[in-house]
Image (tube, rainbow, N blue to C red; front, side, top):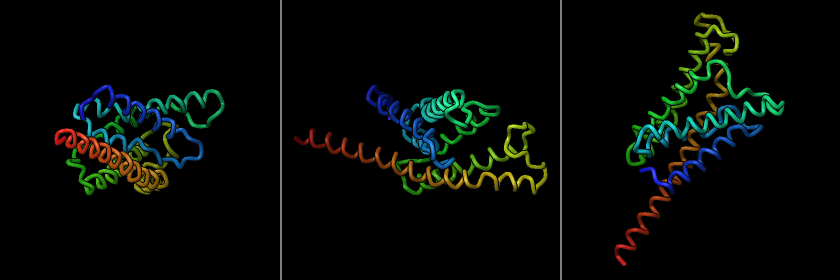
Length: 193
């Protein structure tokens, strides 16, 4: 997909909606569209620097909203915290999974939708376990048992991230396919008219 004014409007709308959805009260932690957005952007946006911007901008906006709510006593989740840059770097890597999706192959979309949050889960939890920051996780001991405890701490988040990525990938890729299919049919009809 080439970046046009029409595409920018649609992508900005996607960013805003995903950002607002991520801060919605009562949403299970991990059930958010940003992983699917990263995979989708990596798959459809030709200029890869823009592919990385789409999900990161959505994360940054929602983190900013979390911070505003937290500082005003409305929310209990900080938007910005120590170690957040690491999460942004790890999240940026998730966009790379979309690079391997060609021709909207359902198997590759499904594989990327499972692999991206899985890689994030292992990398982020490994870094939390290795961290000596008092803000990082539950400060599990630096033993193999402590590592497995850290992974276990992240299981609920991981399970919801897999479910969300599969669902939102289906929505994003399916919508994109249907929109482009209709657009191609309209173009073909105009040519044959």
